[in-house]
Length: 291
Image (tube, rainbow, N blue to C red):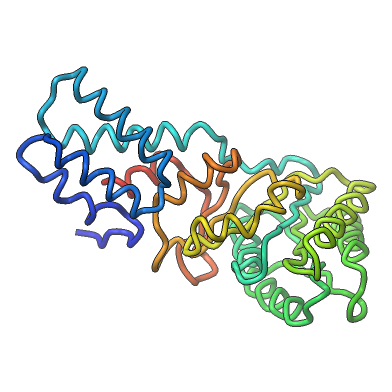
């Protein structure tokens, strides 16, 4: 049997689904497992109440029915949001935002590779000019992904001008998709949002922005979401990318993050390799999460 994803609820719920009948312990154990998996108290309560009501309506005593109902409930909730990447513009411009340390630059390299696997031409723009290391790191990932990169012409160059040059080059070369890396930290959150606003204004003089993707580290869960609130509030984010959905990540966070932000998850990363970023499919995820 294939090894279960470490963020799966399989082990936590084995006792619930393997019991002989449904009783009060079923609901206590289910609630505990969902809370531990970072679904959050509100979502947990709603889901347990909904499944209890279904069990009473159908008068079932089989715990496997609880498993099926939980899987359907998770899938239904995840499916309220459209995970489709909107990349029909030419060039389609994607801004990638997020606090430093979430794997933003790495994610851009993986995203570029993901797009290349669909035969899309891609160029990345190194507009996180406040960190010289970020530019070098992005160049390494761009090379691995087999895509071009526009680097700052000098240290500390205005990020908006790098973004402008990247879009300009894409239009000149007929490149289909532009991915722009942005700063994850400045001295103040206000400064960071002003910088992002400026990048948007400058880019939109040449091409509409198709997506603003916020990268979140799944292992930090609700804490990481709190850190990223300024981006969600002021950054015009259109979708989420969850990285590090392995190791110590808690699967319930995937559902909780969509419910809390009202934003769709569009991509998920489940490993270190360049091919480990994939599109998000609610049906597949619910199946892996619940079993």
